Image (tube, rainbow, N blue to C red; front, side, top):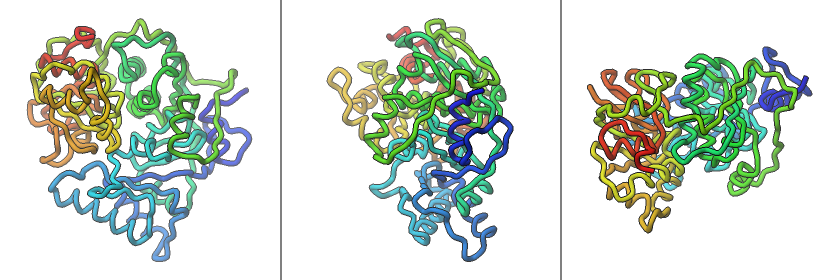
Length: 431
């Protein structure tokens, strides 16, 4: 019996020839990532458990991105960033990307890719559930709690159970009205928010390999919304070209064997999928946009690790070009590199930033912003009775702010189309 790509990567990390689902193994971690929400408690646990002479197992493998609650006057949020700063200074952490400096990068999951930390065949853990985003690079990436992260910080190892794998194959050529967000919402509607609990979600098929790296990251990013331990896409030429621009270290790529065993497999023809939304208050509450078209909105939001990448803004830009928004529309680039691209990339002679400015959108500095609710002064935050359509990843009560707001999740095409009309709108009306 062959192995899946996830099993092969975990076997390599554990120093074994073969691993089986359900088997417990010690993994050697290649990268540990943390941020301003979970970094301070992780460091506190590490100091407590490893004692006064605690040592970081490998400073080069620790990466710290302040990104969640940073552009705020909230003193508790500010204190968390101060704690990161103190820790990075005390331990001379090279891979600390401080806010307010030229090194600041924005949202951790996108910055990991852009800064060259995502290497095929490696193992990455992060103190954030959406760490599974990095699996788009043919690597194993998953989120852990602060205690597990503290253990990795001191030892470079973690004890994990090898997950079963599920496979999702998308056949056909992706129509212009669909994005990776629609594909993952399709899956979530089919298997629900616990359908992949502690399993690897492997994505395959022509439509998947036609996607850019940024779009692939949207697929793997939302594996956690199905309870997945990790999302993964085998590395190909697109992956190798992206990695080569950012990192020259050697690496090994893996593919699933043809006789690998899966818990379950799903096959889709992308030409049969319509633009989709997740209705309040769960990412699996899927419906066709057509069925909720006309729902009145108070805000539109294009941003986050899921929907704030350059491909998301290209999609939004082609719909917003030469048009005006009818409701407050928030544009939040996931990374500072993406923000720079908004000022450089052109559609019909106008930069993306110009298109958004001319349409009447509000553009923020790169960060997580309203995706995780945040303090009251957070850009784009949902307030009582808001009805928001958003490119983010979660729409649980209070996720983007007030518990009395409603959030619909959709692709940047659908959000942009809805911004123009002020009601939920099928993007095919504008394409």
